[in-house]
Image 1: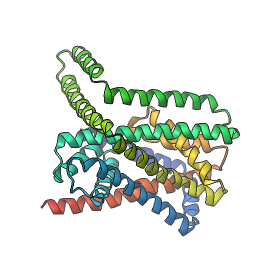
Image 2: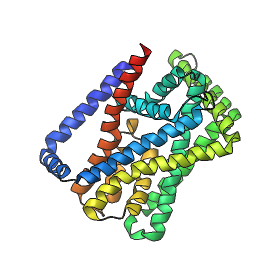
Image 3: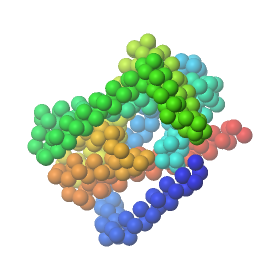
Length: 327
């Protein structure tokens, strides 16, 4: 695990160094452009980044109160920032474990925390996919010219999103089917110890997910509440590049909101290791005919600053505070 994590960081560092060396002039231009971003634009982006974590905390609070009535919205927001530190530090793989650990310190059993985290992740993925499908339909109806030659790719993206949602629903609700899959996986694994161990972990996680999903689906009001909060939460992130594009290109924020929802939907179904670069790749392709390259890169720089760099720093403070409390 540690060697794999070190490899990821080294690979990222090499890619970043090569990118800096090959695009030194462009990076200087971006740096100059970033300095010319109006303070109120950065402040607005920062506000929506903060609102994202407030809403994420609200989701955690809504789900966690089932097991601990004293769990507060403030603790949920703290947990969201706490997890953001580990999400970035481990390229996404450690966020769930960090959340389970934090919830356990607040009196929520690890098994329940695992199921809760998996359901939370599943609902978020469903929200991203459905948001993207809605964005596709609205863009196609209102601004079909913006799609250019990507209409068929969008149809493929919608189909992939539909399959993705169906797969999540099947995994969350079809106990008999998942049992059969794990029996088959066990036969394929044979006597391979590592495979058997991984399958065992996946089976336990699936069971926890199904138990939590079954409980949440019985409480339809709470499920709908969490789903709607996810839409609000993702809007807070989607609007950040839109604010930059509006300030530089005059692009309507409502239009960029729909476009960015499509970008995230496609990034969700892209087969990219750790998800690195998927959003940026889709973003540049879809916005290529709307804004110049320098503005697009600037929008991405501001976006990453607000959703990655600053939350990582604030999350690091939260981790430090939590460790101090543990002592």
